[in-house]
Image (cartoon, rainbow, N blue to C red; front, side, top):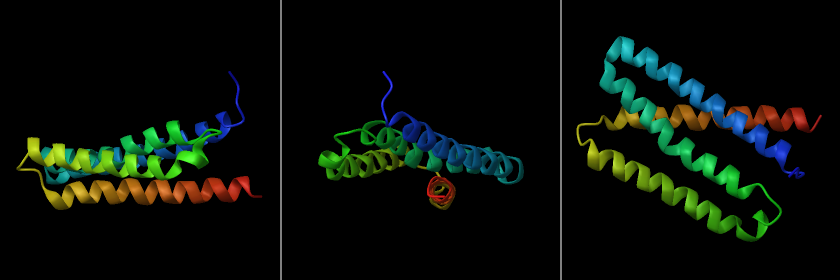
Length: 123
């Protein structure tokens, strides 16, 4: 079924892919220079925020999104909190700063990509 939200959803999924690629590159560089554990922590930190972001884009880009936006935002943040909780509970030796660095990389690149996408759409 073709909906008017299809193109927007596809664009936002592309933005998330840019964040995932940036985190993967940072993780590979960190793995080569600082060790595999640090690279893994960076990649997991990015996944903790990108997976809920994907869920938010898939659920929140539709006709009824305005009515449920607060619940979607709460769900997104709850998924992020659960991701951090699971990661640090299952891997207690994980490096907090590396995990947060992965999170920052994902957030900054997706935010910058979204801004570029919005500027391109508004032209």
